[in-house]
Amino acid sequence: MKTKAFIYTLLFALIVSCGKSANYTPEFIKDTTGRYLFNANEVIEVYFENNELFLKWRGAEKIEPLYLDENTYFIKEMNKKIQFLKHPETQVFYISEVPEDEETEITYNYKKLEDSVQVPSTYLKNEQYSEALEGYLAIQKEDSTSVFIKENGFNRLGYSKLREKKYKEAIEVFKINVALHAESDNVYDSLADAYVKNGDSLEAYNNYKKALQYNNGNRSAKRFVAAYNKK
Image 1 (cartoon, rainbow, N blue to C red):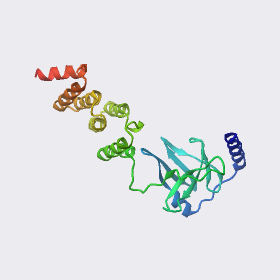
Image 2 (cartoon, helix red, strand yellow; image 1 turned 90 degrees about the vertical axis):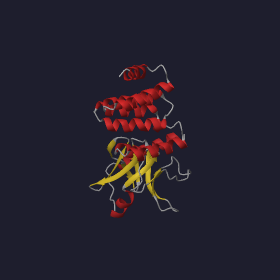
Image 3 (tube, rainbow, N blue to C red; image 1 turned 60 degrees about the horizontal axis):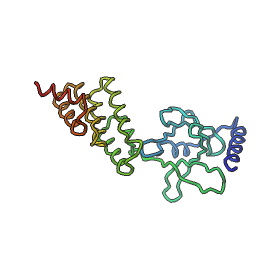
């Protein structure tokens, strides 16, 4: 019943909000503009254009929140009502999910980040591979099953860079995969593939040999190592 009540309340609020517009103060814009930590590897970016509020999140560059009332918005992409709140103790701004009923305590869900703080995916996007690896290793330490460190995800990214002929970048991505999944023959096989494309046959050989240590049935590794040894 609470869920239904919330939906009816939200629909009413959406109807009433038509025609409303926010009048943001310079202080509010300054306080709320920035990046908020959605999870260990993702951020929500808040920005303003022509006194209108927008978000960037999960590849969407211009999410327009629906203004409900003063400092309350509905984000259809998240299916959530949110507010911007300052934590009374730390004085740090958060994006807070508005609870379905008034009895539920306020939660401070997504913390605003300092400009210098980045998540691993941002480092990876900016080709700062050492910093990205450090971040992903920290995630792995906290949760070895995290979706953010899956082997196949880095493999796809590495091969996409190979297709773009960005061989050195592909090597760096595959190196991250090796560091995270050191007992998988596939990560060494992929790194070796990138070294082949980059013209480094010795490093390719070394990594194909490593792949065979973990899977002596790896056919591509066997072929390359045999051919290399015949030279």
